[in-house]
Amino acid sequence: MKQQIDLKLLQQQREERFQKSLFGANQMTQSVEDKPASSKVPLLSNENFVQIYVKCTITPEFVAQKELRDDNVDNEIDIVFDDVIENEELGMKKEYNVFVERQLVQQIKLLKQNYIEKQDLIKMPVCGSNGIRLPEEQDLLLYFEFFKIRENSTECQLLLQSQDLKSLYGLLICGCLFNDEIAQDLAFKFLTKKPTLEIIMKLLLVTVHYESKYQMYMYKLVKQILYFYNGILKEITDPILNEVTQNLKQLSIEKPNIIRVNAKNFSLKINTTFLYPLYKQYEKERAAVFKPINEYTQFQVLRNADIPDQTEDSEYPHIYIIKKQSDQQQYLYGIQLEAHAEIQIYDNKCEKYQKYNDSYLGCVERNIWGTSMVVYDDGYPESAQLQFPDWIGQKRRRLMKIEYETNIMANEPRYFDTVFLNLDTKQWEELITLRPHYNQEKDCYQLNFFGRAKIASARNFQLIKAGDDKTIQLLHGKMEANSFNLDFRPPLSILQAFAISMVSISSKALVS
Image 1 (cartoon, one colour):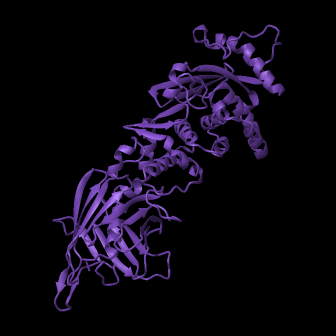
Image 2 (cartoon, one colour; image 1 turned 180 degrees about the horizontal axis):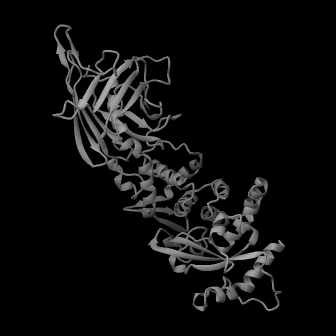
Image 3 (cartoon, helix red, strand yellow; image 1 turned 120 degrees about the vertical axis):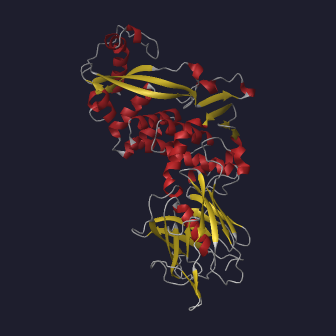
């Protein structure tokens, strides 16, 4: 308690003198309370404290705004006092000073890096966005108090239990600024104990702007909310959203880039343009399976590999796995719930496979005869395009179309053509089946599979570019009852080649 009083006295008494000596009169700022230091306050030595000069710059583009509802024009208190949102017209404080115990300067990396020994000063720049509040003096003081006890979980819990929402958001902001994962974890834990839609959206603002370890998690969480809100995702499994989904009537979308949360007295307006970096990062994380592979690579595709008792003719669902042959790394999972149904593709094994969950990557849709298949990514249907703001999800893309020749008599091998989208060049390319030659003496069709097929099967095939039968673009060979080799080269992607394999393995009504 005495340390907090000392800090306050030192703050009041020495702020003006520090600014005059270190920054000049033209950079002076008044104290928060605009009160002169009392002449009756005893002088304190600064041997135990170092001044931090916090200077904030704010981007002009609005990110978030809190607006009064039309029927609450007189209730301005809801606008002024908010735990995250700061409207531009409030005249946000852009410069201030705060003091930190000298011993913490060597322990907190950011303070140590920004310490100027000659001036005995720490300069701390902060970049803000129009609408998202900046760290305040009390936020930093709370963080320093937390830092001193951060290794004692019991004391940390007691400290945070006594804080209001604004202080918890402030600790989360400081945890991001100082790259302190313990502070972020605890603040996030307390903020999500009783989450509302408003809290979720404010956490999105804070974690994304201040680049928290939770920013991608919150981005995916809000994406789930919108998919569920629009009826595309049938069930939300994240427990944080259990209560939030009961109040989605507060949510509305305004094209092209506005999410609005309508509370009783105010409306929270969010510009999703600031999510563009997260959108690009999300796309980059999935590029390994969507974009062309770098070189000719050998893979293995297994059907029902994790259901040992099932055979090729077993009941559905059918589960497919693609592994890299050199290291057995599993890349993708496919699931077909029943015969002639679509095949859904995921990047992880799921306890419950649900279209449009976080692991969902796309699907293979087919006509009833099994002669025409279309591969899509995980985007939302075109019919829902007006229900999504920019940079949260995207309209689904067609990645490939596969057309089989009808072969009811099964007197020839399976032939099919495919056109696919090269996501590097954004151009469509075509592959065709390399036709085997007929051996009259043995009364069968033959094609050299270079040891990559051990069992004769209609599911053995090779794809080439039209006019180039010397370069095999994709080879598919059956090794065992439910095991297939899959070798392919760029510009095919892992997801596209996997889709070709699953389509060839699955049963098709008019194709043998």
